[in-house]
Amino acid sequence: PVLILLGPPGAGKGTQARMLEEKFGMVQLSTGDLLRAAVKKGTDAGKQAKAVMDAGGLVSDDIVIAILRERLGAPDIVHGVILDGFPRTTPQAEALDQLLAERDQKIDAAISLDVDDNEMVNRISGRYACAGCGEGYHDHFKIPQKIGVCDACSGTEMTRRADDTAETVGSRLQAYHAQTAPLIAYYEARGALHRVPAMDAIQDVAARLDAVVAKTS
Ligand code: AP5
Ligand code: ZN
Image 1 (cartoon, protein in one colour):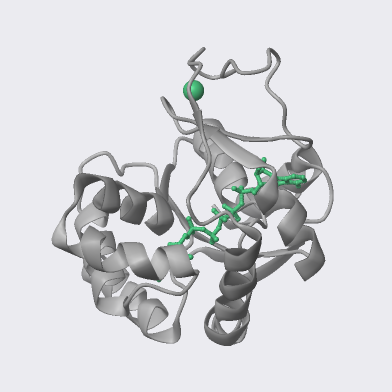
Image 2 (tube, protein in one colour; image 1 turned 45 degrees about the vertical axis):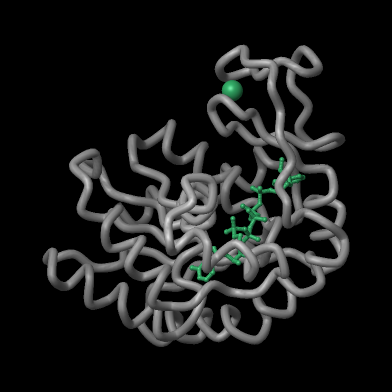
């Protein structure tokens, strides 16, 4: 199946996508992760994207769609995908419909993780991740069993994202409301929208997502 996770920064898209990946064998496809990898590699797209990402704006549709098109063609995508952070604008949603149509596929569910804006700052300011495997953690909400040691790979190097600052969170939320929130109506009109309350604990939100996946695949 093809699932889309919609939701503001810090809603838990990445956290939930990784859990779905493990449970159902689907591939998590995060345009944020792909862009951060391009920045690290120093590709042309990465160079253009870096300043925009650090300021909390949206990277241009052309760059993001090109990155996604390339990734969707990779051979590891067998049991479906979870799109995490894409699409984020109406042109991206239209491009996705077209990319999938070329592959005789369509969207099975667009899941909106619904959270209050004031929760975002708490979630984003406490976030860090394992540098080795990317597993995400939080200073208060998701603590590894042994502090400083990754539960998933036993790595001990942890990183925080350059755009996870109090100032940037405001711009990212603004970009979400102005450019991404309209996609809720876009998918509702296509009968693909599922709204999932996401203010509760990670496991409770995960159970709601499992129920949606069971219904749609
Ligand atoms: P991206 O990487 O997609 O970031 P984002 O949308 O801002 O989302 P986040 O990764 O911040 O949050 P999340 O929802 O995944 O939350 P998480 O699970 O980590 O994009 C970064 C930038 O790249 C953008 O600003 C833009 O510039 C660019 N970009 C990316 N895609 C683009 C596109 N398509 N078009 C244009 N530009 C694009 O959870 C957050 C924290 O909370 C974690 O610490 C977690 O442990 C904790 N947590 C999660 N769930 C819960 C819970 N239920 N209760 C308590 N804590 C929780
Ligand atoms: Zn790890």
